[in-house]
Image (cartoon, rainbow, N blue to C red; front, top):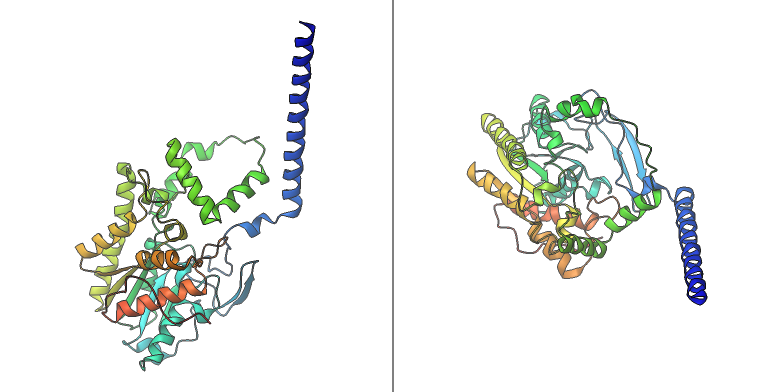
Length: 375
């Protein structure tokens, strides 16, 4: 009996020592992350020099260089607050030019201006002997509701380009918080007015682990499989509902309301004798984890199909970049997006620009995206 008691006591002591060692180790790791890790460098890059009065453009005549561990690029704006060269009156009045509207994927976040989609389209057209100006109306943080305002602004300053390209980013353009009235209603809600202060400690170690896990396609794949196994939606950003096979009625309605703005843009283009093209740009997880995001819970291509169906309903020409980009990644396993910032890299932007050029030229996009080798 005494021997059993001693063994239990020794076991308990060992467990206690192991627990203390574990807590000390976690504490040391937590302290190390807080001291040595720049958490701001582990998330997508924010932009500055935004015109705060409208939130639809940058301040005019600015130049700023952004630098992270992944890239370095400079944003210079013209007199209209756009990342582009100065537009001459002749360029503004030329109907053969192109107008491209979208978010940071149109702006060309993470790459120099020459690698942005508008600039690469200009190079492709010039190489074919048909030089054009592609007006870059890309604005980080914008969504479909803002694109209509950008279009009205372009018409207002005299852009006569007959071809209008609306770039829809599946990653966050369908965040319901962008819907008119939703954000205001949320801020007026009682829980936002009387939210109690949280005393729960915030773990930099846990946050760092989550962010680093999201940067690895392999880890993301494992987590999606784990979520499927235990029946938990581990991919749950505000816009992730677009991939749910089973959406709530409110989610389905929110998505449709966003799409209906494309219908309003179509009517605006028709009224001004413009040709509308829509480009559906996938996010990184759709491309790098396409198979993992196709399960009983998620459908990687669902939002893209709904965009195509809506465009067909209203006779709008639409290009879905997902099949080609996913096929290209699967073929070579070469990243098309930066893992931390999650914007396309030079190759990703180049493949998208070449596919768009083929699309505008009334030629069917190829099953896979191929083109000139990267510089």
